[in-house]
Amino acid sequence: MLLSSRRPLQQQINAMNERIATLENDNRELRTQLHEAQRRASVMADDDPNEKDGGMSQGVATLYRALFEELRFAKQQQWMTTNYLLVVLAAIFGIGKVIDPLTDCEKVIATLLLLTGVGFSYYVLIDLQLYMGRTRKRLDAIQAEDSKFFSPEERKVLKFEPYKHPSLRNLPTLIILMGTAAFGALLVGYAIWRSL
Picture 1 (cartoon, rainbow, N blue to C red):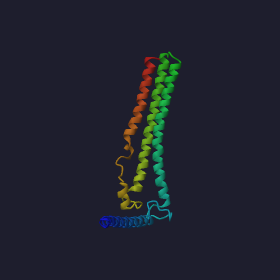
Picture 2: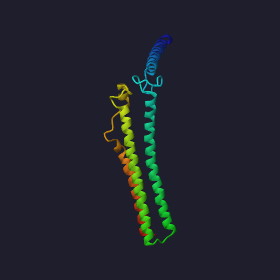
Picture 3: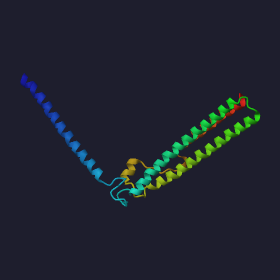
Picture 4: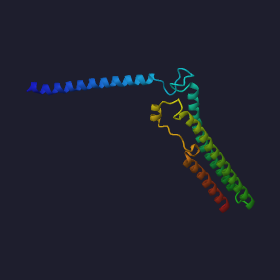
């Protein structure tokens, strides 16, 4: 009886050892594949600064990173523009509250300040959006199918798609920012004409 219970246990141990050996082989194969992938020319080749066939030259790689940084910066500037406008609107409202009651002439001046602030912020927001569109066109030139900077495999993995209308990308965000500016101005304008 004791001998018969050892046999299934030994079979289980043998099966586990075989599984461990299989996993070790798989691990070795994956390490070999990883090592081969690392040896191949990468997207951002830094061996030869003038290399163009196996990857990006150092100059193009730097430009590519800089263009993405410019996009991030421009988007942050859009948010900052909206935030600053809201601070200006709050200041106009606060000044109006301090010198309450406002005369009709002061109300007109406050309204003109509101409209000027919103108009200027709209100009800056739209200009930044167009700038991001121009930057995306430059990125498209680097990512294009006929460029030599990305291999077909890399293009497939990264799912590059050219922008049909680069300046309209993230348009909903722009609309929300502009809507926030308009809504804030309407609220302050209403408060100035209604209660102050």
